Amino acid sequence: MQSAYRTSPFFEYYEDDLEPLFKDAATGLLAHNLKIFELLSELIGIEAEISKTQTYEAHPDIPDLRFLVNAKRYSSFDAEPYIQVLEVNHGFLPNLSVLDLLFNEGPNTLGYLEKTSLSHLELPLEENQ
Image (cartoon, rainbow, N blue to C red; front, side, top):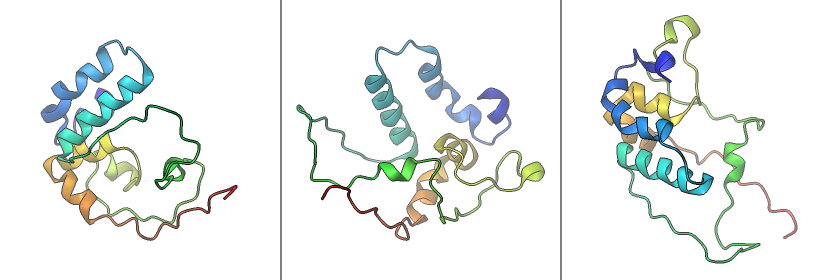
């Protein structure tokens, strides 16, 4: 992470907050993922309520948005360019990670995300329904 982002405008601003995620031993994958989500939400300024189910729900009454993180799925989403560290060498590289956005946009990350529309995405039809 340091070799990729050390020269980004906001790396030093966030590195102390993020360092424990990479150095502290994880007690479990779910706990670690929730810790990451909570910290990133706090740093970005997103208020998100987290709740866990007590039992397995085969067909929960919420949209299944897992398809949004399928790296093999083609997306017609055109991210609004922002300045990136290696942009001079590679041009703007969209959809890298939230850390790329945070290290390059800093406190403007929330504003960038709020003006980004995902409304063009069509939810896939549920199989077996």
